[in-house]
Structure formats: structure tokens, C-alpha cells
Image 1 (cartoon, helix red, strand yellow):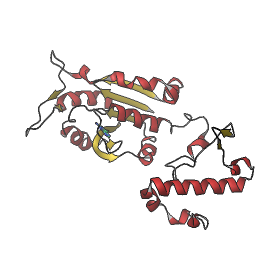
Image 2: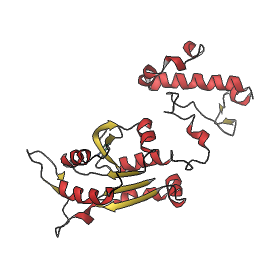
Image 3: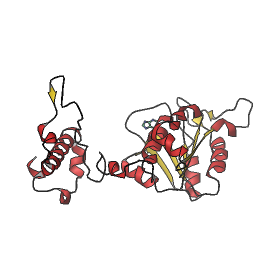
Image 4: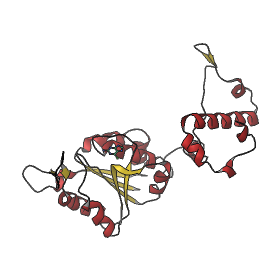
Length: 242
Ligand code: 6GU
């Protein structure tokens, strides 16, 4: 997969050299390039923003600068334009899965009060897929941290990036629609706290049942909205007793 990120703070994206995403890049599974939006300015001050039409606080990013940048970076590939914004749809594992099937993503990181709305309108009209995505109901200063979140979530789904693909199957926000059950490792007793006995029993069916019950109880307590969306057909007789 090819991913281009455009930002006025390209240094923010340095973390993408690290960990799993960095490894995917070095393995040639992910071709990730970060660009400085100011490279597409034409004035001496390298201006990217201006005051909002209609008045109000803050500054808006200019469409002409973004247009030159995105024309270059999207090129002729028909890339999918991702615009992190607190007014977007909330980014979920389903978005990550869909984006992981794309050949080329271009992530346009805005700052200030956002990017002139004509930019998204223009690239949609030109036939690009465009996703305006938020990472949650809180306000960040710009799209860079959200871009890190989305690129990590997408990057780990690319074939060959996660060593053991089974670890993608059981985790929270996967197909089961439940939060992950609690996990334990050695030592079996620590600070007076014991690992639940069932996990040491070697009884595979009981372990599976215990984990499922824990996942259901946790989801009910922390994310009742997820329980409401659960497909009843995926529940078994024991689930209904939790
Ligand atoms: Cl994508 N951008 C900004 N600036 N704030 C956010 C966000 C994005 N998602 C949640 N808050």
C-alpha cells in the first residue's frame, strides 16, 4: 500500500518509523511518504491559511495551496483522500478494514479551524473517494495525531504486517462485536492477586466459556451501546445467562 501524508508539521509523523508500522515500511509492505504542505505555497511567507469568510474566530486553510499539494500527491492513481476532522464520521475498525483494501491513501492533515470546504467538494467531484473521519468526541489541535491513529490501525491489517494473523481475529472491535476478555501471564500470584483458576486448569472448553462470559460482562458494563448492536444470532444459550 502507498500512503502519502500532507501536513504543516511533518515531524509529527516521525513516530511512523517505529514499531510495527516502521517494520512494515522497511519490509516494503507499506510505502509511506510525509510531505510539508508549505512546499506548495508560492509567497515569501509560505502562507497556508487566511481569515474565514463570514467572520468568526481562527484561521482557515486555503484551498489553492491544498489543491496544488493534492493534485501532485494524488497524481493519476485515483487515490482515496482521507481528511481527519472532528466533524467527520467516527473512525472505527470497519473504516480501518475498508481503507486497508485501498492501493493508495492520501491523508490531508488540517490545522487551525480546518480546510476550506471546497477542497473536499472538488476531489469528490473529480471522482476520488473522500473520507472525512474523526477519532472521537474531543478536540485536537490538528489532524496529525488522528492520522497516526488511522495509519497504525490500517497498517496492522495489511497482509504480512502482523506476524500471527490469528492475533487479529480475537481482539476487541473484531467481528464478535465484544470487548476483549482480561488477559494474564506469569507469575500466577502477584501482590496478593491470583490468576483466575480456570485459566490454569487446562480445560479448554471451560476457558473458552469463561473468556466469553468476561467479554460479555465487560462489554455490558463499559459499552452498552455495543451490546445493543450485537447480532442476536451470534449469541449462544449460555450467553443469555450472563
Ligand atoms: Cl480527526 N482532528 C481534530 N483536530 N480533532 C479531533 C479529531 C480530528 N478527531 C477527534 N478530535
